[in-house]
Image 1 (cartoon, one colour):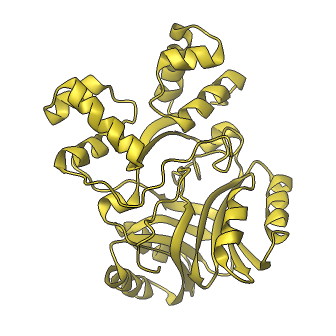
Image 2 (cartoon, helix red, strand yellow; image 1 turned 180 degrees about the vertical axis):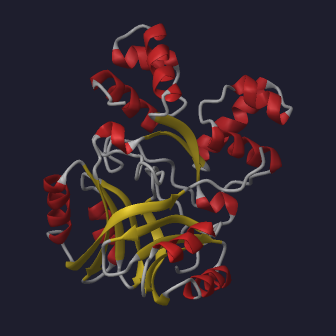
Length: 333
């Protein structure tokens, strides 16, 4: 299902605030409440858009994130399947780059990372791994804010590629407000965790439905959900099937920079088409994700990255098959 101009405008609103009211949508787009409601339902029922809660890693105790490149002898798919089967993996892809498989791991700490590395090293055909250790998620997938707390230790669906299409609302669009900066994560109890799990499954679930599931009154449930949203514990957003917005090229990029990585990462996050940016150390200094509608658009983004201040080397890999892409966590429902 292709999006028309009105659909695209709706999606931009949902990407900024997945729980935006039908009334506000109607006022923003200059249509009736009924028209806005009907069109949103059509997008949801067709599967073109999903509205979900993206829970921040620190809420579930994620303190270590790493991007791993697998050097594979022979077919890469068996090793990719091993990586995808790991609960710690959030993204796994077979690529046309120098390494046959790339994966992102999200775990609690360094010891857990070492255990995951050991599993990957023993996967079929793997001759070795190369690691980029993320110290800061400048722009997490589908999220407009930094997710790893400053105190952290150093560190799309397979059928449709990455779902946040740059042409609907680029993740790097400066008009998209960033979630609040969280210096000290607020306490999250079991009721909060249940609410987060429910929002992961359905970001537009009504306060009445949520209240029934957690056994609280609607006002109490509403207050909790608003606190979780305002604290940055969860960002409710619209995920769009990339095929509906014309995304045809999905590429990963590793940058080597001169000087500090933070400035280069911040500059990369402001470029159109960039959906993910992490700063750190290891194989690269900065890792980015790029979505583009065609080769010229992809080339323009890659050239812009090469021209960024401080960048001395760029390596890219084309995602031939995204085997796994999941940014949900095991939370109670």
